[in-house]
Amino acid sequence: MRKIESTGWGRTLRSISSEFEPRSLEELQEYVGGHESSRGVIVHGLRRSYGDSSLNIGGVSINAAFLSGLTFHQDTEMVTVGTGVSMRTLERASLERQLFPPVVPGTGFVSIGGAIAADIHGKSHHITGSFSSCVKRIRLLYADGQIRDLYPQGPGADHFWATVGGLGLTGMILEADLQLIQMHEPSVLVEETRVNNLEEMLGLLSSSDENFQHTVAWIDLSGDFRGRGVVGKGNYVTKNSATKKSSPGKIKESASLPFPNIGGISFINKYSVRAFNEIWFRKPLTKGITSIDAFMHPLDRIQNWNRIYGGRGFLQYQFVVPEGNEDFLAHVLATMKDLGAASFLGVLKKFGEGSPAHLSFPKPGWTLALDIPAHLDNLEQALNSLDSQLCARDGRIYLIKDARLKPEFVPVMYPRLEEWRAIRNNMDPRGMWQSDQSRRLKLC
Image 1 (tube, rainbow, N blue to C red):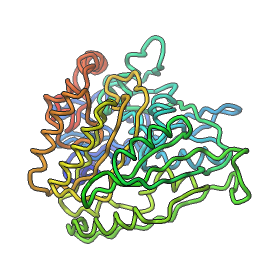
Image 2: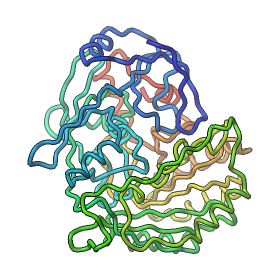
Image 3: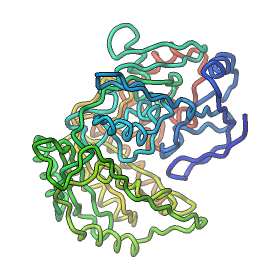
């Protein structure tokens, strides 16, 4: 056991906790079953949650890295994967067998345990749903040290769906069985289109749902914030769509450049962001076959890109709002303009149906994710106002990205919270699984 200082990916919240690195499953069971602490235990993977979901000031943080198993089931499209395995590792191992996870997030550097605990989503949500749609079994370590297998249907299904999207607060996920999809080659047939305003962007995203497996839009967060940007649409390359330029079975690694650690200097200001966004908007559009890695995980090309926001870090404000509330999207952009919240990352997607998980974020409607420098004047007041309006519009904030939401908003945004609490308390009656976020938001 050693003391560690940790931070969320947004680098706004920090904690000092004791880290436990088990060497075996037996050692882990013994530790968890006999653990007594008022500050409890939380599990961490690769620490890509933006706020305090994996932080535990004064408590214990269990490192899941040793759960690194990866076993493909012969003659099936199933894989059993340890939850310390990264999405990137799973993707590459799967592509070697011409398979692929049906749902992947914007970065490959998330652990499988984190993907389940957040019920992550990708550019394909309108077709595939969230990550839980491919999870067929969860092996969970309970607070009493016992291990049980949970399935999406049948006895124990309530524990399964409380764990999916449950932010690590029901137990420690040890491994999972995942249903993969067949992949002809590691490529995507991409079509990008420039749009000049938010209305064009929304219309193009809506009309693309039926014809494209993946849709996403980048929004220019500079200048007049009118919603101009680039809409990207993509389909996996199949035998029919493959060309002589494509290369079945060959995995193309995107070049990765480290962002230097130069202290607390921020590179974000209205001039640098406006210049970058202008270049990004005017860059040649992709129309043709590109690698899966480049399309799915564009920011992974820059290691530690979160340093660009300097020592005070940034917040990611991601929400979903039902269709019919498009005016709210415009209002958010106008609010960002008033704040001077220049940023190079604004992403808009359209969600399909949500999952049965109690605290899963996706629901039908529009989801907008904005990276916002944390140092801005009046930022907290503005975001609190937006949160209140979201509640009135049946919207919600993505908890795995959150670092500052007020606890009174959570039951409104997540109306099944009390149902989840009852199941969670049954699974962990002594309240062992805790995090800074669970205490801040009064989740448990």
